[in-house]
Image (cartoon, rainbow, N blue to C red):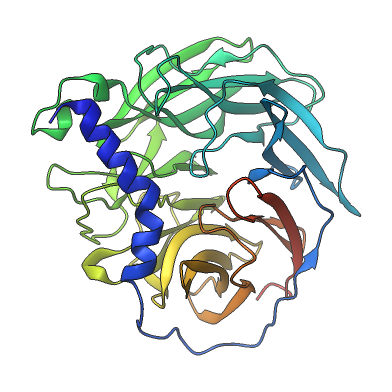
Amino acid sequence: MHNAAMKILEKTICSVGLLCLTTLFTGCAQDAKPVAFEPTLKPLQALGVAGSMAPFLARGADGSIVISWLEPRGDDHLLQYAVLAENGWGEPRTVAKGDGWFINWADFPAVVPISEKLWAAYWMVQQAGGGYAYDVNVALSHDNGESWSKPVLGHSDNSEAEHGFVSFYPLDDGVGFVYLDGRKQVNEYTEDPNETGMTLRAATVTSEGVLADEQLVDNLICDCCQTDVAMTAEGPIAVYRNRTEKEIRDIYVTRRVDGQWTEGKPVSDDNWEIYGCPVNGPEVFANGSDVAIAWFSGANETPKVQLVRSSDSGKTLSEPVIVSNSKSLGHVGMTLDSANNAWVTWHASAGEGLVEIKLRRVSASNELGPVHTLVEKGEVTSFSVPQIAIHGNDLIVAWTEGGYGETHVVTAKIELPSPQ
């Protein structure tokens, strides 16, 4: 089969993967015994016009929270952002606007505070060939988002292929990032996925807006799962979904050491064999040397949300803790509070193709709290990636509601119990 046909088939698998998981994973074991805490969602003001989608929460070094999202405006789309203030979100502002963007629920833009003054943003622009051929545009702001530079292409490769799923991190006086690069996918199809598969790459945009330091991190990875990066006491750590020649697609971790990314290593030996991308990326968060990684696996037809920890900036990892094995569908969110409690969210099947958003606290000693339903079925679209972030003693939650063409971004906060 020609490579183009293979990619159409694989992307079709990606787009329906959540529905397949919804049908497959039912009737599983129940979660662990609860502890006392009942979260209450307090809605924040509405953001975006009808059709808004794909919220992304980013936390600045000073603890500030920035939300970004996409919204339609005629034939164009806008990348918008707002900063959380004492009484809710500040005034929405526009980073960029365009009519040829790649708009997708799984691969979505972001606005991220990098340092005291430097912010970075990215969005995807469709190539002339259309489909899943698109490029990453990166823009910088040197005044906390007040003004933005002309965008720079986030890769030197100009293949008619996928480039996306970006995760930023601070680097020197600029911004570093990892991303998915599909330059090999334009090759003629062979039985060896190493010749036509997706790659994980890294690059830098300097403070002057120059692309630099492009690196190959992993030569074969999953095609459309989100990446994530956190800053530890010893530098950046990144997580992504790997792919082997035998179609094992487990979560891997890599660290940036002396300017180079280390060889990726499995976070857990899940051994998930799946012949298509499950569209389910991992999350990583760091408090100094303390790191937590959360992810979804469907290995052995047993859906699980899992979490591992590290106390040495990711050099070594604990055995995984099962956060949920009850109707889990993934799309995991995770953050740590000041006491290293992990707060984990995920989609769970509610039947009839509907999903709910669940929340669970995992203490620093990995004691499991109760599973809470944050958002009930019918109030969240299954084709979305809910977001969470810590702001003081509040948990900020963002998600997309509504069906195709009728979506809108919703946000709320939860007052957390005192850290334990």
